[in-house]
Amino acid sequence: QPDATVLDGGADATVSDASDGATDAANDAVALPDAPIVDLDAATTPWAITLGSGFTNSVAVDQNQNILACAALAQNSTFFLEEFDPTGAVLWSKSAGVASCSAATFDPSGNVIAVGGTAATVDLGGGAIGPGAFIVKYDSVGNFVWQAGPFAGASLVQVRAKSNGDIVAGGAFTGGVDFGGGTV
Image 1 (cartoon, one colour):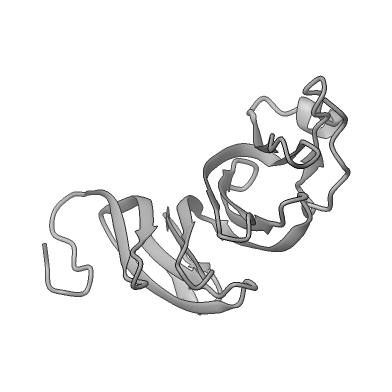
Image 2: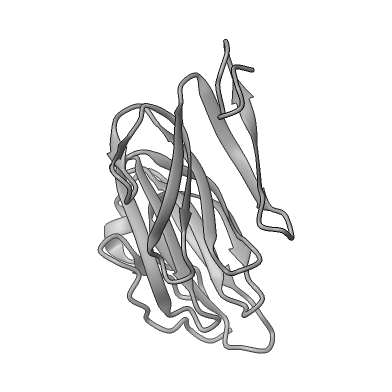
């Protein structure tokens, strides 16, 4: 396979060589694994990028073949969300302090919904939120739309959007949690 195109993935991003899996020296020195995104589409030139040290927790693809990556970068336990076009060019990205992005998806209008959690207070774009689980929505170009939470004692690890735009999230909780319709 040919080498991946060099992409601007932000300060923590590095580009992988799609033919031999080599990464840059900065990430090789970190004991934690890289958080890779790899597109092996036969119709395009294969490309790969690492978002930094940590874990890519979910990826989603919209009707335009744009790719959404949701990660928890380990250097700062950072919430990280980034959208790429089909060639690997970065369309937009979001990050927030001590938090994690567990899962993200596109809704039918191309908006992005992400779930995650934080043990501290973070700003996802709509003001301080935390500690606890959260849901956040950005429009199709990465502008903040709304956030819900914090949901103390809960962890949200999956999210999907219905065809009508309603959101379904899954995870776990201890004790009682009020997700908006009364304590469960």
